[in-house]
Amino acid sequence: MNDSQHLDHNGGDAELETLLRSLRALEPPLETRLLNRAAISEALAQVQSRRVQRELPWWRRTIPVPVPLAIGLAAAVMAAFVMVRELPRNDREIGSSPPSSETQGQMIVEEPSPIHLTSAVSTLQYYERQTYLVGVGPIQMESGYQIEE
Image (cartoon, rainbow, N blue to C red; front, top):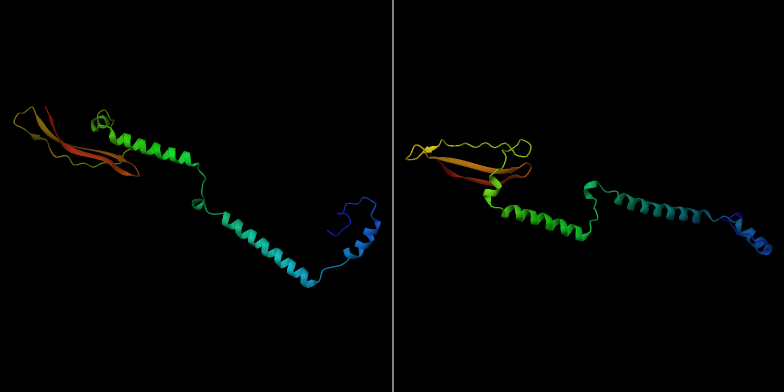
C-alpha cells in the first residue's frame, strides 16, 4: 500500500511527495513483521473455527419456522386426533374395507368356534377387530361376541 500507484495524485503537492518518499522506502523490523503475521494467522484461525461450527451435521442443524405456523400445525394435528377419537365406533368399523397389506399389518386372530344357542338358527360368534398403523402399532382394538340369526 506504500506504492505511489494507490495515492490520489492531483499534481499540486510535490513537496509532500518528496517528504513521503523516504518513508515509503522504510521496511518494518523483522520482529514487527513476525508479530503482525502471527496476529493475522490467529484471526484467520478464529474465522475458520467459526466456519467449522456452522457446518454442523444435518441432524444438528436448526430450521427456522415461524411461530404462528408451528402453532397452527400443532393445533391442526391435535384437532384431527380428537376428531378421530370422537367418532362413534360403529362409524369407523361399518363399511370399512378389509385390511390391505400396505396399510395394515398382518393380524393373527384365533377365533373360537361358534357356540350354538337354544335355537338352531341363532349362533353366538366371537369377533376381534383391530386398527393397526404400520410403524406405530395397534391404534384401536375391540373384541366381543355377536349373535347372528
